[in-house]
Length: 88
Image: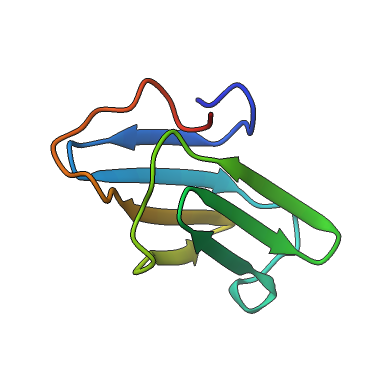
């Protein structure tokens, strides 16, 4: 769990997989995910979460909302690397 954002994450040498519990009554259509270079953000109305990442990621991000949880997969630009955490 990331101490800064509270998001759960796991990683491989090429990806970061993030899980975020969304506030009650937030549906997929309410969620806006933005990923640019070395930062990520999730917004749903007045609620938001995100920050600077430990490294750069590609813009082709996959995400989905299932049962109140956002699942986000980020592809690291420098494959074969392990980050010490999620956020810088």
